[in-house]
Length: 105
View 1: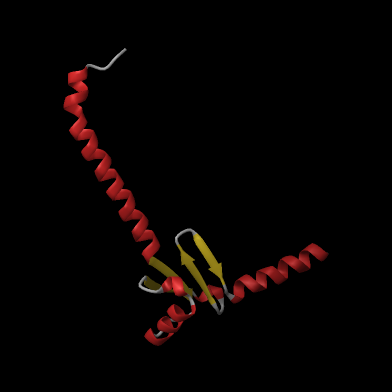
View 2 (view 1 turned 180 degrees about the vertical axis):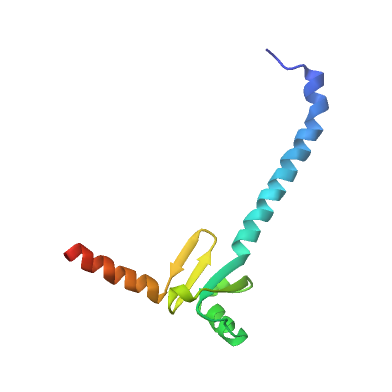
């Protein structure tokens, strides 16, 4: 069944606007996800520590860094950037040691 050319013609401006709005929405969501970096630590980082962290990791420059406190990680930090996780916590290291011991048993 072919679509009526008049129908297509009348609908076209709406479809173009819908496509543009959807593209803009997706681009905004991508930017939001990329701009926020979550750093989990056992204590609240001072501003100077956040600056040092930004200097160590060039990808952190000009991005929002949110510091979340979680005493369960024991020490170190966990960095979340979008769907990527960099686990530098003591809890993670202890779990690795535990798993290595269990494998050998």
